[in-house]
Length: 537
Image (cartoon, rainbow, N blue to C red; front, side):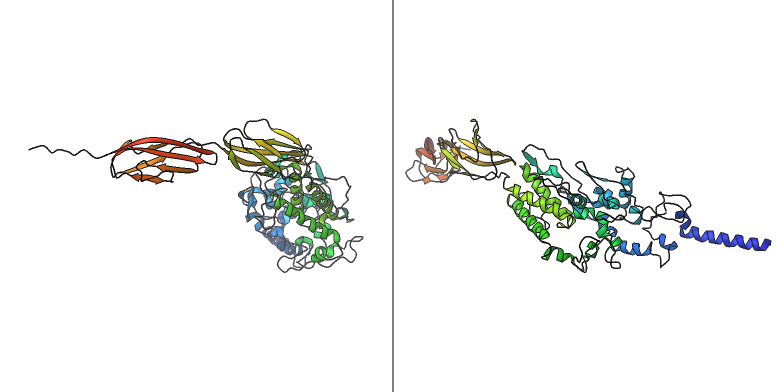
């Protein structure tokens, strides 16, 4: 009996040792444990879950084929606001597993050291619930609503976990009164990438109309998944699409899969590829969205507001100041581009947003000046053609010479006599219902020059080189020199001359420009050196 008990004790000890070795006793407990994480990206789970276990092994393989598993999430260097950042540093909340867990736990300020990619334990709280009834569908970031900024909230069940990162990082609150906006105030790159939640709920963009919009995709009747997950976590094809891959398009193979959109009551017999959504004739609303997006892009390039220096055509001149409605239209365009679905996430909202933006663009003021002359003499009267467009209430001309600015109604030309010389910056300010626009042009007003020059010396030796330096004022453009010996002349500004005879000569300079001429005469003495007499020794 003692031997049997001893043998049983040895077997129990060995069994316990095996569980300790694989770490299962660390994770499987009889009490709720939301604090123990696996630092090996789910590899330890496979030691307890067998090859045929669908809870861990299949989702893990799918995750490895997802964008979440990409090292580029934490290693990429991006241009953000004109500076280079490593994504794990500037976006730890959404680019690192540690940063996300800190954020949902209420700690979004402390640094992340040794960052790792988004993994199983970033989203899941494994082994919660009662013993024997593990809740793998419990999500770390699940909450009733997610704050999308600008006093709007996203509520789509478990999709709120996705919305924590897949939202606009910048949602500016624009002033209601028309004016100007400096573009760097809308965010270094606008709403930032992954603005899907904003488009899904239909918020963040600036509406110029009042039509009520309901997103059918945001109200899919799927009690477990809701919004985002209804399509992106739907039943997939092995490890390529759906579920933990979250993919509808394989970037490497080009294979596309949208069968997850066939939710009951939605797209019965929907197209089999994403391409059909954009290029087919069954979805004219999406074709209109793409056409409107391209049209607004070209308008923003021509203004210019977009730089056109990037392949995605989303980079803009951050230090520019533009009419307030132009900044709003830019933000709407960027929201559409950063969402990336080209309207699929919320076709009604995206179409209305772009349609209203395109219509509003006609009201955005663009100031253009064309002067009759760019340069003239004192007393010149310059006509300024106002070639501006947009909804303009007043045109204000400031001629830059200290005279009182003139405010005129509508798009009005300007005319002004300049009674003093100098360089003047003429500014046209347009004000209207869509904001303020400013344009400037330079005008140069000349006066008759005053001739002035200096010589190497007043007295020089014959056959020596004399340099004449022009010091005339009034911006002369022509010079006529007469060196007074009946031989030498020049039209250079600073000539050199060699006198070959002795005497007193009147040097004459005539300095001129379009406004007139002025003459100065000065005398030079040309002599021979005095011979030196050598003394006797």
